[in-house]
Length: 314
Image (cartoon, rainbow, N blue to C red; front, top):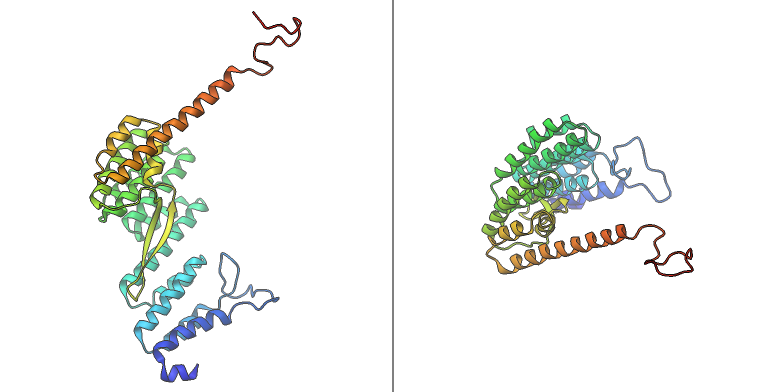
């Protein structure tokens, strides 16, 4: 390493960061060091944040330092170590890279607060630190938790805030996906409102042009110092096709009518077929349930159980 520090300073930072990471892993057969800073998800010691920062700072090249800090922070986020991720991200000189990592850490912190039922803290984080699309997701999730706790007033307020923040997202593609996410959840309790949100999503998707109707992931963009953009999926299950199936069971004609806004023939056709398929599947389930209700326990298809010599009932 001294030779790299002297002659290849632009590469030394990356090597120091990786050595700090690899050298701090527990040896095979030895117990992990529970007193050191560790990954909260797996309980594995990855070395101290201070040592990692010191190793990266030895590089004289700012771009190499930024890339090493970015890689370390991304790894920390993947391990659910939010404090380490923030400490490393704060050292990045490029604003976009720094802010995207820190905001993702804040979103993960708000999600943790929701899981431990600290709804007030989750809302506070969303209010003060998150962008509009992430705010909408947190507000919606907190609203569902308030509804489960029986506070319908607070739930309705936050649901309205989620829709408001979603409408303020500038990027139409991202806004459409947030709309679909909200419509999918709201449809369980307020179908009319879900249709209104779905209509707004359809208009945004039509203006975008090319999109995958089966893609059901919400993504957060991490801007790497080298110019690359890495997508981080933070929610799923609310793509265009899945929402179409959900709403079609409530009102098929209205759903198909809204889909006519889509000018791209392939996505429009997929969605119409998906809506019809949802109705057919639902109809089969209803018929199967009715058949089960008509056949009472002990009924042997009209045969008199032997009481009248096994003759058919008249």
